[in-house]
Length: 538
Image 1 (cartoon, rainbow, N blue to C red):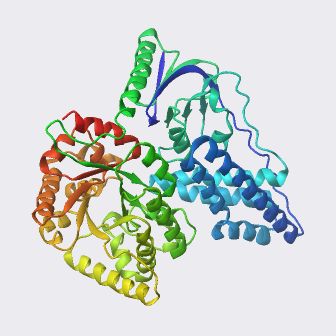
Image 2: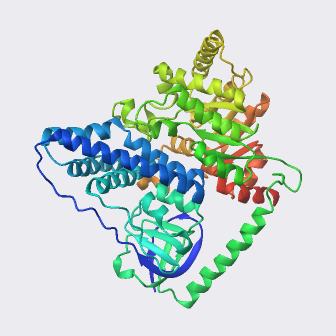
Image 3: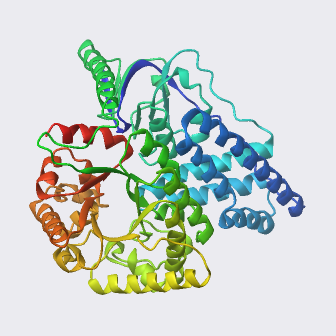
């Protein structure tokens, strides 16, 4: 038996034969051309065909995998409208007098390389998306169609990597699991695997074409791929399969039940989302509301600043879908590990301690005001709360409230309706905010603890640096005491406090959160029912 270690991106297990997927790359020939205009027209026609194909894939994904997966192909369509990408292709054709296929290939390599070199895992994963849309354009230029692999029996799909298009076009009834050499938990293929409930492991350096046809077992919990597993391992995997079925049935019975301990203590369990595409999962998992809508993804997935109307549409969709349940939207948290080219942020020696989040909003007020206008306008469509990240002083809160009041006056003068009862909150993610939480509690309606940043700032340990992982103790008593002090401050002034960072889903801390008086825990939709189960067993 051979064991290959990777990273699980969907917790489930499977056994079966391996089918190694070999991508047939398009044959790109570098040609010198005399008519650049003709090549540009060829490119535009191929691009238009690609957009039409992506529209069809959107509908297919919507029907087979839900809106979250379908949104991937909407993002691909947006990428085809990216000005920088299109300008690069046209510029290469015009200046080098080369064929369109070659210009797209060079642009693809340049943009994919740019994304893969970024620090943020989410942005790194966009490298695969660039390659996917570029390959689509090239195939349209040379007249080749996408062809799905012929899968004759249920199998574990192994590959160097898989694009969203390839993943969606495969016969789902014959896919037992995905196992790839490259990719990440934030890749769109990983998202598709999760929404389709297919076990998936990425980062398997040891896989190759030699595995084709071999019997294997895959464990999405541990991230392991077992080649020719022995009887003991097979028994372990089979047992996990049975436990998965039993646990899923138990958790399904918890839908509609209260999040109440055996002695009557209650806590709200909300969901974290990145955009409207995630709401289906929120509703399916019976969340009490949305505790964190990461609005920065509207900026990350756009080639330019999202307009007021674009933002309003996204916020409205979420608020209406939640039917009166609370929706907490965080204003854009750009900077640090979330760099966006069109923001033109200066390179910083230590971006985690630099120009980010509310600091950008308070110094680039036109961007902030656009978002606030969209949020206020959306407030009439549901139960909206707004929170502000990276707060370190009460003066920042005063400044935020002054801008909000000014935007409200502006909307009123334009006879544009908005709710005047929106809850305003701040994130407790810096030690400074936690230490002055007794003052902040007198200025806002609620706190939400961002445990990831609070941990790194408290322990002076960059969470993006893998070498510091042994020093980044999320259970450090200093971190937990800061959270407890913030909870006491909130309750002293009649305000509520939630946790939206990773520690909210840490079941080993659930009892402690209840003991110190945390009012709300916000987690990924898939953790809603397991967390409810944990609460009810206390």
